[in-house]
Image 1 (cartoon, rainbow, N blue to C red):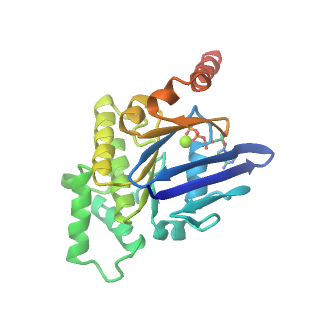
Image 2 (cartoon, helix red, strand yellow):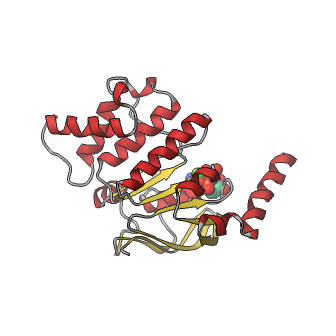
Length: 249
Ligand SMILES: Nc1ncnc2c1ncn2[C@@H]1O[C@H](COP(=O)(O)OP(=O)(O)OP(=O)(O)O)[C@@H](O)[C@H]1O
Ligand SMILES: [Mg+2]
């Protein structure tokens, strides 16, 4: 199976703190891999390293076998890696459709002409896929949290990625909306999309993922099948430790 992403011994420091320590794992073509771990484990930081927002102190990120470490975000995006943000960041005054068109124009093989009918058709298809067809003319700022998250997925897909990074698409959503998010991930999987996912809803991650990689305090503690990882003693104690801390606070 072709390796889409290789994380090779990534270490990140912020000031005197080590945020990621010698993290390594791979994602293969067509796989859904989830990065799990308690708050502050370093999941978003790793997404930021992959997408070029945070420099690695040491280690390498390989995309389709080629090092992309240190590339600026636009170049990473054009190479074929798209992401969503933990706090959705659509362009607020633009309509849902315009947000998706931005993805189409700035991604891999961007369309360079003015707005064309084929771009609009592609944007409409993507909005349909994420269940926002009826909201296509609505400014992004008027969408609900759940809709904004799905819009980010559509905008990311519009860049025609070979790898999609999803950071907490279900956080803060109602049980119904969490279910919709899971359905969306499953429909992306049916299309053969390769996905690295971060989510605190372990039911969701276990349901949609081929493999889990567990981080705790910046270190990989275990990787394997969802069942293996979720029952691993170190994973249980990492999550339990968090709950005890939360109760003390
Ligand atoms: N820009 C920054 N400067 C300094 N410290 C940071 C910065 N960004 C994150 N951190 C710290 O790095 C650690 C890892 O943060 P990160 O956001 O990667 O965790 P996470 O696993 O995504 O957590 P969560 O589940 O809460 O989203 C945390 O202790 C956080 O406070
Ligand atoms: Mg995070």
